[in-house]
Length: 263
View 1 (cartoon, rainbow, N blue to C red):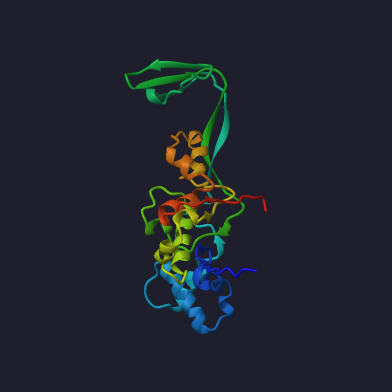
View 2: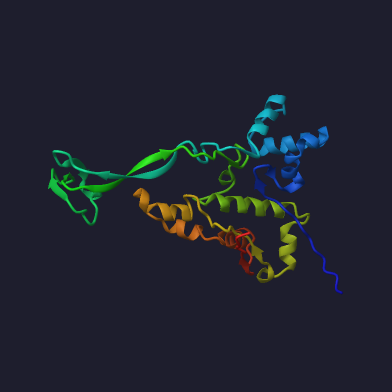
């Protein structure tokens, strides 16, 4: 049997901190670590959370409260005011329902029962004399308000020119850089010896990129009265982390892809 040398490395970021150096694992078991190992993990977390100075007891409490699974922080998602559309059935009373509207905001196909009276070149008055349905933006207080989130203060898009990248792609780029940086070899040493078309990269998400910069924005923009952008469509692809890292970070020409499954 041939013996094949295997060089491995890992890196990334999650709610517990950096994967490299086992800091993420150490954060989860930090109460069982000796003081030296725990202090090293506190310093690692403080660095990515942009916390300056010595690791005092107060800073430890702050890091504990802003890592791992915790209450959703509103800068990521406001669970007490989740935006959705409430459907209203409107019925005119003794008089028609009237409101003024910029001409450019008129629907391309006027609903039945709408009367339009020009007020000037840019504004019209809409009169609705029949029952109709409308959607009004509303906020819902969700029952579930906790989730795993990146350590507070760590923003991967601040580390490079993100250009409206979905957050999943930002995390994948950070993970690739972290893993390559902890390989034990300079990447150029490998690139000089291994042909670019024989290096492959596999990464992706079963849900694709679903924040506002990816498929989430592409699917919700029309319902919010916004325009879909070409970036949302392309950056929303499930395999985009693999393709992006392969081509633009490592400069490879080999295969890229991902595995998707229910479990």
